[in-house]
Image 1 (cartoon, one colour):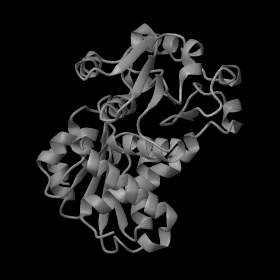
Image 2 (cartoon, one colour; image 1 turned 180 degrees about the horizontal axis):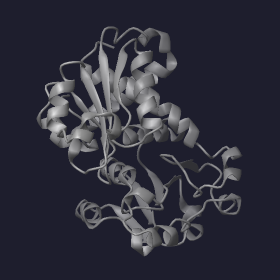
Image 3 (cartoon, rainbow, N blue to C red; image 1 turned 90 degrees about the vertical axis):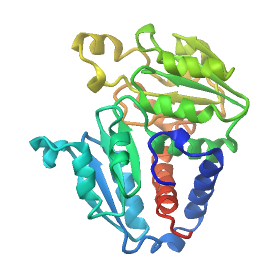
Image 4 (tube, helix red, strand yellow; image 1 turned 90 degrees about the horizontal axis):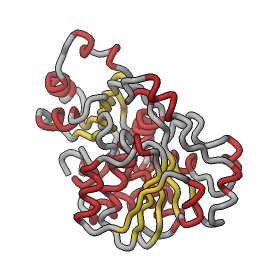
Length: 304
């Protein structure tokens, strides 16, 4: 496993191996506390992040390794005009593995083409976010007991939501999944994703009102309308409140439905929902650390 740029870089067997290993780590963290001793992770984050960056760093530290890197482009030589290719060639002299986030689509792929060490895409613009997808898969499998044979609703910004794009691509490989794509018409799923779903004969339909379909869902995946992806402030202000999940809507949902969100949230999930046992987005954060621990071990070829 050389690089991870998008979810389909992993075979279904490799995904299962990573999820299985994550569950072993959850069951016995001390057994893995020195597996990466002497190894270094470089976190190259050209745009802000809380959960992804900190979970990568926590993952490596809890494996006994160390971390170096930067948390914004402002604190790197990118401010001086250094290219991604030159940065990765430099960083590979100091680290054993790289996690990289960049606002420009395709940047992680460029880095991987010039790297002699594994590169993990930690999010590239509105394109892909494969480690969030692994987090989502582990969360769903752990809480629902399966990957497949369920109905998932993806709600909010489906145009720019890289987590949504990655998750759909990953779930295409599993049997019996029905997708409900819930968004305003301005933020519908991109044509290339829709074309992929049609080509594979997947069951999906699009809706504009969450309350009309929430009762059908086993999993509800909420997303925020991303201000940083809009060029027009007026469009952002008009669309940011398109969908707000509150207690009233939750009353329409099944008792065993789970609510996920890649976070951060703005106002798309009312805080009153946090106390509902079906709200699993903070559990999802913790699963993210464990799945990244498993991924690091696999990509470094460490015997686990």
